[in-house]
Image (tube, rainbow, N blue to C red; front, side, top):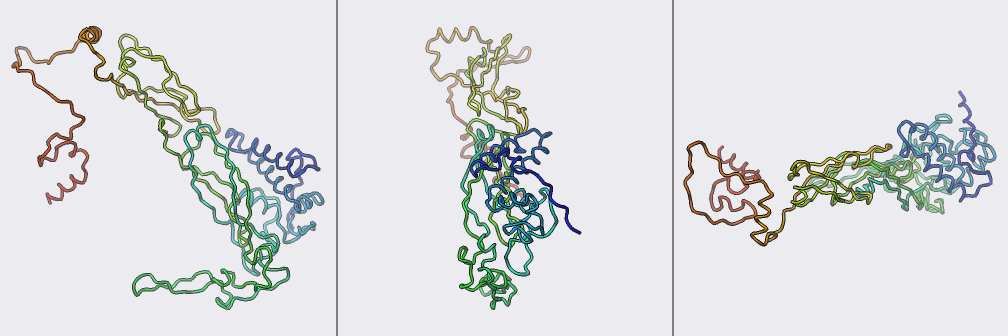
Length: 440
């Protein structure tokens, strides 16, 4: 049963350019249209329409940016890409159709405008079935919290393998015939022994080195002059990576069809970037919320303040006005929640919240230089309560004792075999396990 003809669309109208547009004008129009219709830049309810428009824009650019495909389109319209159609410039039968172009650009599951025949590139190994989509190339991409807060678009140069257009991925000259590989007898695989230990070997089946797993090969005199029989050549391309604001650690950004091409694949794989969030000096992140420390003085804890407390990820100064009614004070480790000052949420104007943990900086030693200053401070602070005791109880009077100020409990129980000495009874898990073993 014959496939229905592809839907006729005006690719020049899709990009809003005249039919006489130059390559530079086509590229400029594509970038403008692609950015405005990118699915990640619109709300969820508009994403479906944006996805259709983005694919149409990319399809138009893919065809019109290439001289051969543009000439075929100008002469025959979308019929030039119909499987088995009578197009021109080599676009009949074995040439790529619109399904294949969309598959390369958007991966499997893209829009379908034609039949279901396999993608052929006018060459390749006779009788060998093509694989599906090529393997993805996974890469990690480090981003700062500032970049995730504001979003980021970056361009980079990518050098990848592309199918040689001189031989259409066959590796040989036109009309040249391949020779069956004598090493693997045309199977494409060979068996070898591999040592796995002293006096031990294992047998494994691997692609044949002579024919690179194809089962046959071209002799040197019959190899393609451009790719030297490799079937692919190196090509440099400028790619654009867009990271939407509000993206998170571990999210993946996919550049569809931008991995190395292989003539035996129906379509190239994707380049997949996994986001790795760098640790920030000020903020900690959990989902759409942010947390930071709020350092204040003892005076501010007791009386309040009105000032900029920190600089946000977009460079804004965050100002807080804290008034303490009726003697209320801020205490260490209390949390101040600032609604709407967290991370932005993807495809939304909403933001998470900012949580500020209170740290109180006490004055340096010597700030009260005179007894008069000490008495003045005591006069405004709450009176200290003495030691409480029951009715009729009178504690024995003792002489004043001397003391030292130490930083921690490291000396507590030192030089003893008591497991509770210092902080070891809390933190030393290995010691605890050792004690359990001793009891057995």
